[in-house]
Image (cartoon, rainbow, N blue to C red; front, side, top):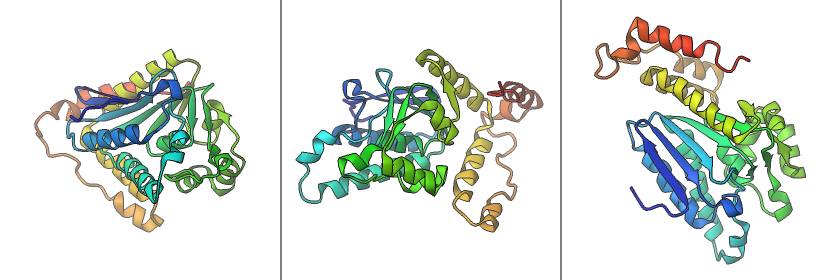
Length: 265
């Protein structure tokens, strides 16, 4: 494991948590933390035992995006290579095998919002602050704030968010389709992340992996191509080592009981 100075990397059995750790500046992404995040998600990608990745920020805030103070230090084509590094990082996250959960409180703007667009689930506090303010810094989004955002919320709303640059709260983010669940406190945020992690770990790991894959890849295809991904394939070999509990009738019954009314209040 490489040394991390500006993020916290925690592995607990099959669950890994990456915490951006610059709370005094709302976990803004300077070059050092950006490089560390790239290394960290590569580590998750190569960990075949990891089943859930949780991405969060330290200090009751998520991420304010790029550290704009660094912009004056960039020379030549450094901005090009830095943006390419950002794009590589979020693409790795989007393609990860583990289920990814983003826990959002406080500031979630610019690159922070773009990070949420590549995770599977997003849970946010109602007073979290979202937006794409790049336009007022005379820069354009570099890793999904126009492209991925438009795919989530539609072209017209993506233009509103990017061209006006206004901030909106977690409840509005949910209305826009950017958030799965809104909570009222950081304590409740942690509880909901833990509860969702429990549900995900109860699923058959290979079935979960395939379902996530066909959802992600099919979403960008013509419907006929997307349907080809849905052709049933036996997701596991009977008697696979370590998977017996998932394939038993009791195992299926237990996880169904855990899931059937989840987030239905």
